[in-house]
Length: 490
Image (cartoon, rainbow, N blue to C red; front, side):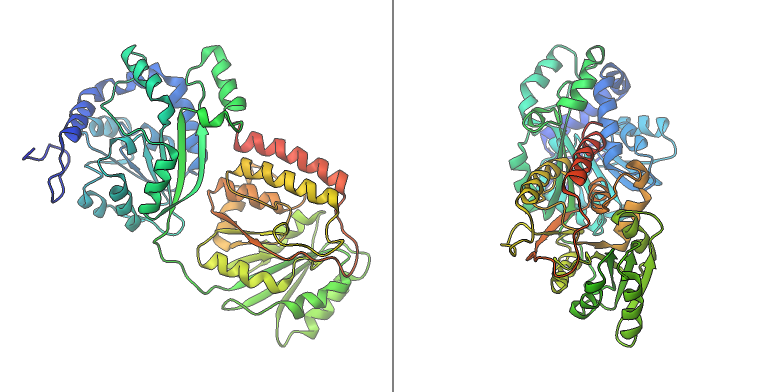
């Protein structure tokens, strides 16, 4: 083809292929029928929009590549939204339906179209667009310039397992017709992402039944489709990605949160053993109504080390570690927030490893793992070890990221990521007496990359554990059900 088609520009090698011409002509022709097809398959589109709203918080900067008539972008309620589509007729429909959003005609494989965008964006969405691209790797590679370290790219596409069913549905007139597309397996997709310098944060699967079927489809999609094994058979795949090429700051201030209850003998050791790292450092003790003089010891240590350490001492108002941690985090001033349990079974000397993993960008929430290296005798009872392994497997499934030890109290994340979790806390509510799962579920909801740092877990040298195996084990089982409803059965 020797001439560019209206509405998109070929690159220097004139890649306005016959396939792209067919896509362009098809999109222009079908634009007037698009709303009718959406209404005809409303169950499918409602579920898709609902899940995309779960992935993309409201009131952010969102770029939708291959926006069609703009319905998805409008459903995401951005503060600043830009939709780009190849078809002038699709864009005209979008502008008519959603006048408060900016829509542009353009080929998203044309570098000039990407270069003229006013980035960066918080989220870049590509819904059913990947299958239309001539070169997925190059198209994705051009998006780095629109990303910050916190930008997430969400790619939604049909599972390749459904290709025969979708073709039959088109032939029967049950699905909107489309030109030939790329049906990719997840393995093929992950390989392309590696080449394009994008890292998957998580992969989600939705819709076993894309029809209502008198309410049965909704029940199946909520409660059966998320189950391991079955979920790989779902129609819709959703990949959440982040850029590997965006620079991240390397030096940040640090606040180390130390919740303590009946830990008087460990307070001074926590200060003495904590290495210096970060551009500046503060220690925030938050005491939980102890009976052994822990609060008085915190005040003594604060005064004794005033010349060399910046130490804050707080008393919690409520009960439970979760309440204590939330109060301390609200008073912390560092760019990096870290939690260190006052029992010191996780050695304070390991905290620089958490800091390095965070500031390097390897993870956006760093979780300790006590179950990789051999631990000291009596550090963990056998029943606790088995329970930890079980809950690690369950929570890995629930948040779609790998966990080996969800119950390790040592965690690190940036201040601005914690603020985002706190802002979105209404979604989960005040459900967590431990404090660990408030952060884990919140990080999963915010699409943060979670990484684990193996630690050498030691036995207590002072005091007794505040954990009850059976009472708290029952609470954890309740939390599994809670997380399933909030993260899977949507």
